[in-house]
Image (cartoon, rainbow, N blue to C red):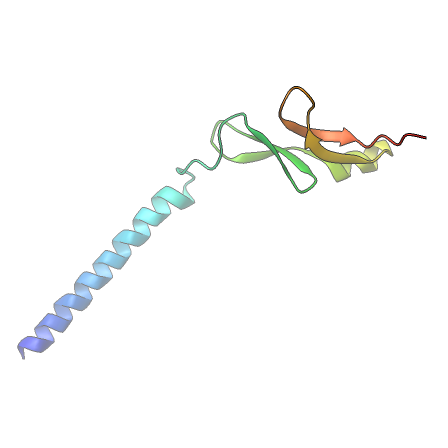
Length: 95
């Protein structure tokens, strides 16, 4: 009989612990409380230029494929020379 009481209390404690861990996970990860990048940092994600917003999340600066379609010239995401950062840069063809 005592064994069943232990199992029931153990199961109850396990369920409470699981719920508590789930709530903590939701608070810190799903609400965006965990910083993902350094504010004002830039990067290329494929052919998309991004910067880190004040909320610590990556935001799109420019989609280089869209820039290419609008301009008729080929653009790729790359670093800005001498300035740091990333943006859409035209591919220059030397003839």
